[in-house]
Length: 242
Image (cartoon, rainbow, N blue to C red; front, side, top):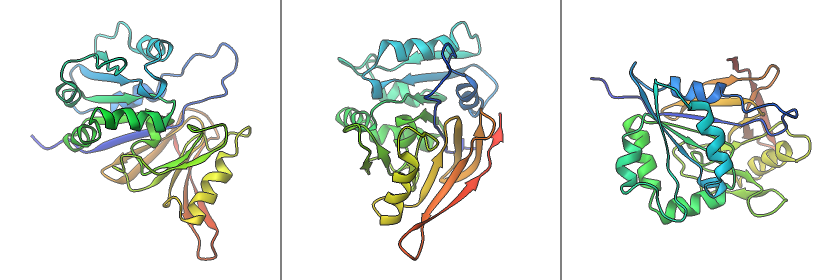
């Protein structure tokens, strides 16, 4: 049997939703569709970035409730792991979904539980690694974050499975994320990388970008790199509409 490809699906969720609009499951469904095989898919949600928030768990659980084609589980780490053998549980999955929140706290807790090598093992074995916001940044080398304060700061402590930086929520008008991300790339504090506007995701196979996808019309991804004059150059990546 051929080896499963290494895959990451990293996306920006939609922060500014209209009142009453529920979480769009399109990206979660897309992540599951990337898993190899035709049988029941084992999907584990990891809400570490919100401190295992019950509301975050409820929102994702609702998407998969009653599904006969998905064996859904949740890995919590507060106040202790919810499974006796984290490595065995995660490597047995087809898809890992990592929620948004604080990427700084996410990585600190994962490293305290020695999860960095486990995540790499899962990736090498072909488990689909997916996530939004903090759960997008974590697979890359880093990106701008508001984990420390309301002001954006540079984060460079990601897992680095993907050798790029990552800018999430690149379309927000009420936060200077688009400008700050490009400033960090221009200064060399972050390497070149990919940014996603709200509702846009990046599907990597190996360490290369396979395609960008979107669940909203008009939104897109960007490639951002430093320019010789000390500035930056960014190139739009039109996504495929799901």
